Amino acid sequence: MRKPLMAGNWKMNKTISEAVSVIKALKSAFADVEDVEILLCPTFTTLYAVSNEVKDSNINIGAQNLFWETKGAFTGEISPVMIKDAGCSYVLVGHSERRQYFGETDETVNKKTRAALVNGLGPVVCIGETLKEREDGVTFKVIEKQIREGLAGLATEQAALVVIAYEPVWAIGTGKTATPDQAQEVHAFIRKVYAQMYKDAVDKVRILYGGSVNSGNVSDLMKKPDIDGGLVGGASLEAESFIKLVKYFK
Ligand code: PGA
Image (cartoon, rainbow, N blue to C red):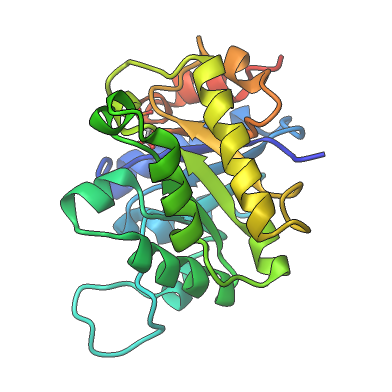
């Protein structure tokens, strides 16, 4: 019912030539993939070159961040209109690194999510608890607040286009993946909260798991009913490992 989505987050890695060379390899390797939607999120400076490279392919491109205004005196920021113009169809919103290092809050996540949707970009909204929050037993409380505040006030049609990425902060870049059961437990909770907010959109919304996903653990994660794909950092940087990961079902 929901098409799986495998998304690569390249974070602050790769020059233009490096990015284009990986994309070329991915493009030919993924030409026969139909059952999985593929998304790559490179840096702003490589977006235009990369999206030109994937024209007429099944690879989608997304940015890693956006500002909520469309233009004006906001030095250093990039608007959703510009991101769309550079060839993107998606944008990451509120990644934990942005919350941790750049002061993003559920309020800014909400503004960015709405701006993405209004401008025709699919927001991939990232949520997740820290290790301390998990150990303190407040995971569900934290997740619920992130969903209710970060995704407040959407129209039903917009709510159906949102992609949620559950990324426990303790699993990002640590090699420590949540077990499929741990992830499913939170994914089911996310869907339950989202159903209370947008009951007519909840069956369409895709919930990705992120945090040390690789070709070895992806298939067990994907067996869970509420896991609709992955948001992948480290294992998306090299063509070979991302190809293996996306083709997990083969
Ligand atoms: P990781 O990163 O796969 O390297 O853990 C995931 C992410 O931060 O999106």
